[in-house]
Amino acid sequence: MDECVKKWFTQCRDQGIPSSEQMLQRKAEDFAKELGHGEHFKGINGWPQSFENRHKIVFRKLCGESASVPESVCEEKTSLL
Image 1 (cartoon, rainbow, N blue to C red):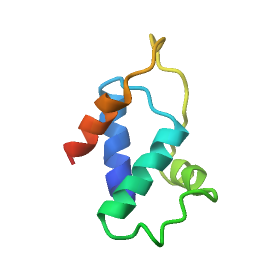
Image 2: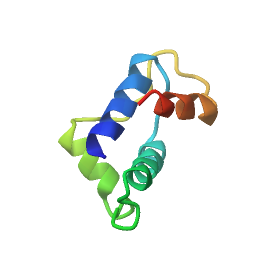
Image 3: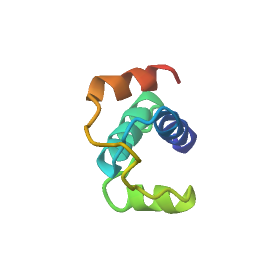
């Protein structure tokens, strides 16, 4: 699941799609369910911070990032995995 979230995050950033810690957590929960780990995934208690630390991710405003991207665009990126 960790690799799926990392790949999703990288694809979003490579295409200049803004993401947030909340989106990261939601995608992690989605991947956990898809992989059959939904009941055991504890995404609420510090998981996003631990993931960010493991992969040296820092959420900052991208150059030219003034508007949010519709959630449907990010959901389409998930289907690429």
